[in-house]
Image (cartoon, rainbow, N blue to C red; front, side, top):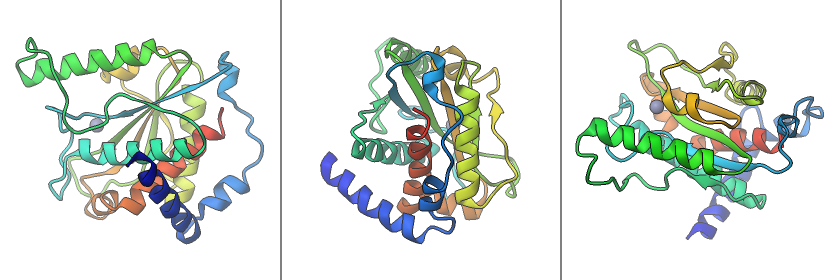
Length: 235
Ligand SMILES: [Zn+2]
């Protein structure tokens, strides 16, 4: 099942690469040798950790179409894992499904969220030479904002990786007005991991056009291809 998904993802990636407006081929083939490498942060080997934001009792933002953010995050993250797998890279996932098992002591939604966040931080910090990519979707109170954004932790390497993710996302989506930014202090997970960490807001679920795109498997794969392509070019 995992293998056929990977093959399916690969076939779809080729199709996406050929048909995508900007063309992934151009992004990766034409890019000069990177001036930045995550190896500069003192890591000899890297372990990719994918964090599909929210899940379980925490659906995250709700799209204008009624879809939970957690579902979109998982869809993109699973495609990231499949694409990384094609390059022989096994990713550690902070979750692999929409349902999560909680201890009995976590009886309220708040308690469940706290338990889950702490468990994810513990997992991420237990991985040797981890590089974290957390997948989320953005939401705003008005319908017009749109576009992807890469946010970075304060740990070494995070800003550089986010800037590269942002540049590649901007090129592929044709949206260039957003820039990579430091994550807010209120995002607990991103402020408590000790590895290079980037949170990718793939798009705005409050924007009708983008929300629809984010539900399309091809678009999810495109996002995943940019994220994994950037990761591969940074290690
Ligand atoms: Zn989120």
